[in-house]
Length: 147
Image: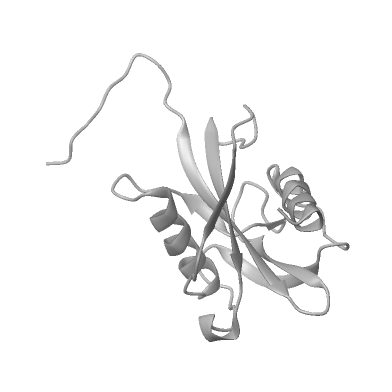
């Protein structure tokens, strides 16, 4: 029988998002187009909710594989984002990872809850779901500053 927990106060959910970079002539980022609400058909970083038995890195690896078919290489823990209201489904905190894509990881293909995916030049990003525009601004700043 599954354990049930009852608390007198709300509990935030945890997610893992992955900024997958392709460093070619110009740096590009892999975005998925969301199939399901919220933000259906909008572009977003691959990612999703952590399952109870996973670490955040395991969740990131699973979500990346499920949504893009890419088997993650080295994941660099980037930053966490916890602003209330960042997800309309409820209080959600995300850990963002950065990864450099390499050809041996596989050609990305939209799977799971991604209706499509595309590489975008970091200077020509579409409108993004959740707070991913803010997250990508931080990733771009890190690239420019060489941190």
